[in-house]
Length: 576
Image 1: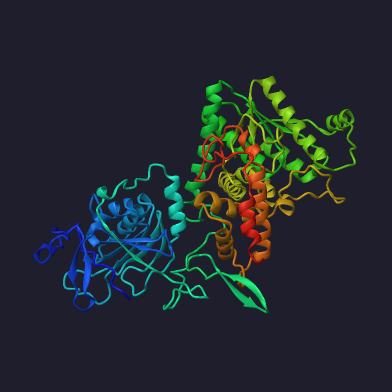
Image 2: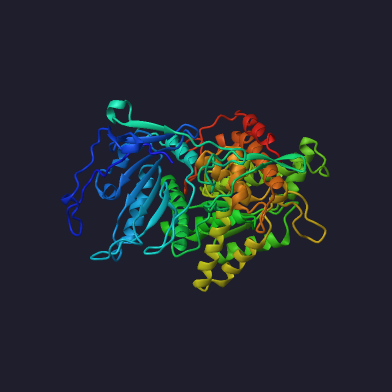
């Protein structure tokens, strides 16, 4: 090891059990040097940063115990000067209720400062004359506790901190303050190196992943080079959009549904409309949109008969989805209308000279646009609004017909990804069951069990769904994972691959997807995400419910002719 600098405590407590002023004074902000015996002259002072020249995003600073608990912690200034990781050595006593407060304090500081925060408190072996020291250790990152030791336990907390993600967040946050000149925060920066050998280890050290640069290494396997990544100790959630199933789960679902319904209610009230028109297919998205619309009408005190729910059977409609659509609308008390699109689309094929036996993009999109025309015209009839049903995942992949189901007057699901749509519908089914509304609950359960499909191609001979979306564009749980990592954390293709392999157990006994599968669908994601921006550039209004959204007026101001070539070339370079 090497002593790079000495960082003293800034804030000396003299209250309650603390009596540190007997022996200590606060450390100086200005950095000087002290003679440290055999180690020679060593920098001394609180305003020190330790920057890694091999990982530019890793800049370490320190504060001591009480420094965290004051109105203006030293870490505030450290972060403004560029620190991404704060380390706190502490001696915090264990008191009833204090561990929860301490946990909140560390998490909150890491969130406000958009940083990693490593907190280590003295514990085992300390004097117990008047106090018992907690031994409470944390690793926090941007508001989230990544690892935590037991209070009064003997364990340690180990995790990685994603400094790439922190740097991306700081770039995104235009209000994140940085010191414009050295005079605003006079400090000393000491540089250190973390060298990596051929096995991605920090040179000269046992490697446990803490010094991993995330790039991976090429190793030989039967004469072929194979990209390998160091395993992570931190948990990577395979379903980052879905709330954890804990005590707060129901509250989170209610919050999301309330945002959706309140957004629609406000738009209805603003336009003076007491009618809504929605196409019901018996699938997940239209089901959630109907449930949200019902909530909005109840909130406004409108009669549910003002919800015109239209089922429009076509060439691929199955008995299962049709009956689910009808039964759901009836159980919720909306106005059910049925209009077959078969004859009108066949006539349209005659008009444009298209062979009805050629099941191409014309065959499929003609149905989607016919349905949208019907909904728009009914909306004009009743003085209502067409409620969009498309979700965030479909928008990301462009899995919608331009000027067909892509268009509406208000899209309530616009920022709800498919994995979350399923979860919200399941929550609503549970709620109906708890209220003894068993008919609606039963229909929702069957909707959840139905394969995702646009039903634009004829059904199989046995009447089952032939056209399954996830067979064509890939598993939605993968695409939602990609979307979250790319937009929320600014991750590049190689890093997304690494995180996906951790999340889905690639190469382990718990493997859900192998590398070849992940790389294949990641390429599809990038290809579609870039090429389909033109559909998002013309998307209707809709409420944002989470940290990731695709509105061209807000979160994703992206040109429609942006190219995916850089991202795809990085993927092509990977050994799949």
